Image 1: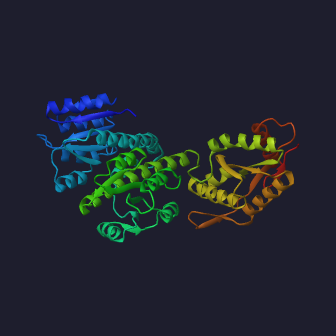
Image 2: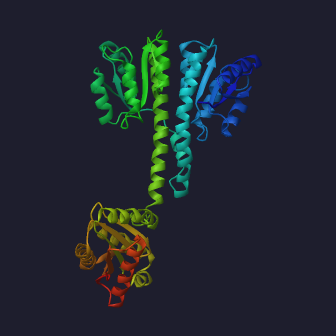
Image 3: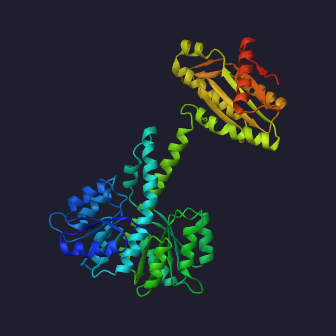
Length: 457
């Protein structure tokens, strides 16, 4: 896949060389000769990935990377440090700054391009989540990007798959001070454990006896229950072909043996941070979607949810020739409650009213607050007599026990009127069914309230 690659280096010859190679691979290339310009381009959303030199005047690559990764609006942008520095301490410094990878010059072009494509694929998924999560701020959830960027990447549950006891013990020993590590030597059992337990990261040795470690990585990346888990592979330095293949199938990162303990800790922390970043955004999206169809006061579904779901329930009822009923409930003289005891008391009544209604319905029933003191209950698989019995049970539940208001300091009596309608042959729409139930509700009000009235067929 193509992407916009930002090349940052203060030496024009280095920039031109990388630009030519990347353009030949059909990447769009942007350039900058200092860290300040690089940060500005990232903040404008112009870069999908950054290839960043370390040795630059003014602000070096480590600090540039740190600022990109610590800013909520740019933390999701992958950064690869490309440098002549080749000491373990340099690599560790880069990873600690938040870099997604550390590439030493002279650069292996094939490996670099594979890494770029792998990171760009991950960013594409994150970008979609970021766009959707940004809407959650409109629902008062807070800033999901800031919360996600603040993640430390510590205290994760990690599954280590390695059938060599000495290797597994060394890796687990390095990680145990910071994370909870479970060792599983059997790859088949590891796949089961990964699917059943809430691990955030799997570390898979590619040197498993009698089993292809890459196949396990592929299975972890493809199964629904493990797709969200980060995967890090451990391999031999000369196993270049399998490293590239692993990146192609979606493995997030890799380490070569002999594994440097500090680099292991740093790369694991990076993967956990990225995984939690995506998880937080995903949770924010789910929360905003839930809030969009949920009444904030009562916790019931709202009118939008009802309007989008009742047509399908109605059509299913017609198609399967199964009954469908609707209850429309309205608290009697609710305005008097508000005028006499205050709107806070009215809210307390509405919350308890919703809870009591919900307690008398089934999981398959659709219960929605459609506005004010009105609740609609859609009752699938239930004909007229059964729906009337449910309505009467709700009416009695509301009437039989006074409602607490003013935080329990006072209790008042509340009643409800209910209109019931069941689908009849020839009825064409859900709206028509709702209208008959609503008409029956008005009849209940006119007949004195605190009663259930069934609509005429």
